[in-house]
Length: 144
Image (tube, helix red, strand yellow):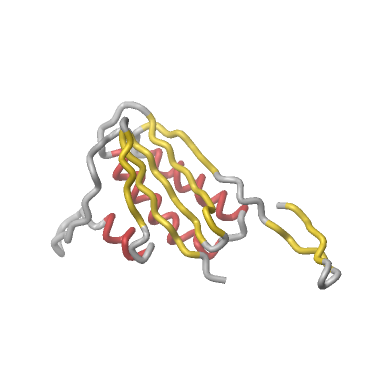
């Protein structure tokens, strides 16, 4: 965070650095908690505590999907601020298998993750295929 002079009001305004956060994690279930920790810390640094709950659910779902791919390398989890009003969560894995949003049965114990991501992001999520895997991104809108 940096302090800047507010010439119009004569006071001091706080400006949060928008430097992104990125972490490389093994494909293990405990990596989901590490991904959440990274995202929580960065959103707190940016003063975006109101987004934490939704962001943690989204990154949990995306990282859990990455863990389930069975890849043997490492996944990358990142958070960015591509615009003042937007936070982008990204999970890169080594699998070319595309995520599929399904309608899980009411008694199903899994299969609702991408539907939850879709709802929390208002449909602002997608996939970029890479030669060595994919990046799944999900955008959360900052409301002031």
